Image 1 (cartoon, rainbow, N blue to C red):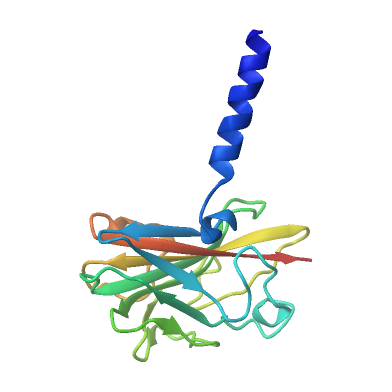
Image 2 (tube, rainbow, N blue to C red):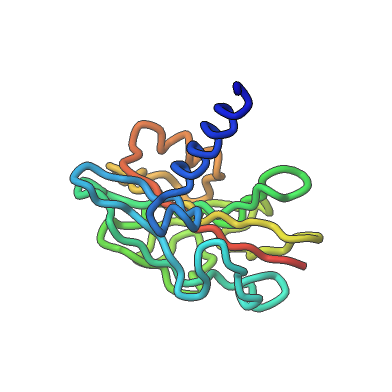
Length: 188
């Protein structure tokens, strides 16, 4: 009898836990904001959890994909973006760091400049390869996940270009209003 109740309880928990909004059902992480709004990030080049087109990888043109977002909190003063691969054999590999994106910007175009200062779009941090700008997916083998994480901040950080992911996360501490995430995959 105990096993019956345990199985029944586990099944109910599974069913209830599986009922989510469409974005949540696909695994997209979006943050609820006061007033019921949700911040989200998308790409016109791939959907959440889909394969990233070769064009945006080391096997293609190695250019950044177009990204767009909406639903940022009213008090947002800037955005930051980090793209990383937690499946890299040597630990999480950072592909892109951008910060001090002005609050009035709600997208990044395809092929964002690899310069320290990105005209009208913020500043570049350094990726794991110690380069400015975007370095696309380039897994040694297998399928890897690439997370594009957008952060809404209550301040402009006003730091020099070249921050690493860790440095950026440290200076963002206490300034985070909301975050959203888009995940794409790539296989070699």
